[in-house]
Image (tube, rainbow, N blue to C red; front, side, top):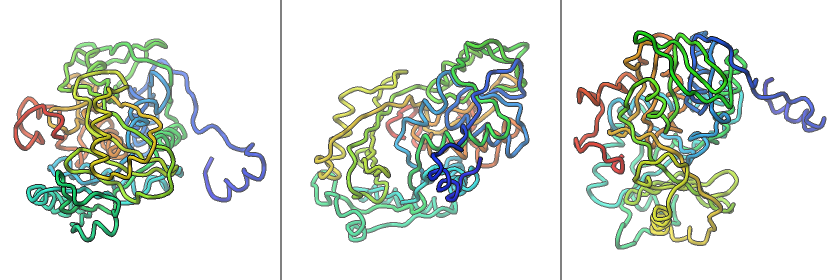
Amino acid sequence: MRFSGLRVLREGLTGNRGWQAHWRDASPKDAYDVVIIGGGGHGLSTAYYLAREHGITNVAVLEKGYLGGGNVGRNTTIVRANYFLPGNSEFYSHSLKLWEGLEQELNYNVMHSQRGQIMLFHSDGQRDTAIRRGNAMRNQGDDAELLSVAQLKKVLPYLDYEQARFPIYGGVLQRRAGTARHDAVAWGYARGASARGVDLVQNCAVTGIDIEGGVVKGVQTSRGAIRAKKVAVIVAGRSSQVAAMAGMRLPIESHVLQAFVTEGLKPCIDHVVSFGMGHFYISQSDKGGLVFGGDLDMYASYAARGNLPLVEHVMEAGMTLMPMIGQAKVLRSWGGIMDMSPDGSPIIDKSPVEGLYLNCGWCYGGFKAVPGSGHCMAHLVATDRPHAAAARLRLDRFRTGRGLMDEEGTGAQHNLH
């Protein structure tokens, strides 16, 4: 089933009786070439690219709940490629390029809107850092523009520029950044994978990983044992728990990150805006709601809900940046379980167990990484070699000290990332 304007018109005139299910709700088979644990954006995109790029279709995606019910549906939908460190920079650049052709490739409207992101800065030191980051982005081949206060006032007239505490000195604009509809991204990849023969198995919790002689043999699930030549762990905030089934202790902490949405309003925010002093970020959805978020809750938790002090903190940051937000009513909030690595960068690598692969540590970057993560992970699983864009996202950097790591050497301070 392909989507087109003509098809939508015809179905609308004939009672919408011709639509088919987007994907097959499969039952698990006894054995697969590849089992992917996790039916979120990263797991589904990995399955899609395994089938499309490498011709590997004897694949099962196992999801303990429903497809797209985890972090891929619990975020602020921002898509960008404004990272600084080598390793991150080329990876997110690769992911953004995939985003730009995703709707045509999937034949599915993921509502990708390149409305641009503006990162504000509030001091001379922050200006220097922003210029350095912008130059790194341009050296990578991505776009970045330095905006003066006068230029900002033309596109963001609603900000409080003269506040004494955090005066706005300027901003960096990436025009190719923007947003996408998070659940539509999961649905699009699920549809594409299923059409190529991948089994998408919902309500199938993994309870164990079978290993013999250091080689993975399959998984134990709530729906029976499944043999597999290769197993990929792609479960975001549950990475530590699933890796423990294989006897591994990952350098991961799980934290809650809250997000909020207001009532629907007339269009008033045209870009994604990031507040450099408050870790506050905001955009306006196609329904009109203001979607925004801030810092982690700063304690380890597997609960997909947050605490009230952080709610207050995020609201204070929003009011400081744009007092007009105080007129909007907050409709709801949600929390995603973030798998935070010590250096704020992800891991796409083989594990010490032969045939077992890891995809985790996405911190704040999980949603925007969905296409790049799946593309690079599929390459790793299919070839046992890292993709060039993810070559630095190695697990052993935490043991050797070589690789990405944090620039200051200050260790696991997640609030700095």
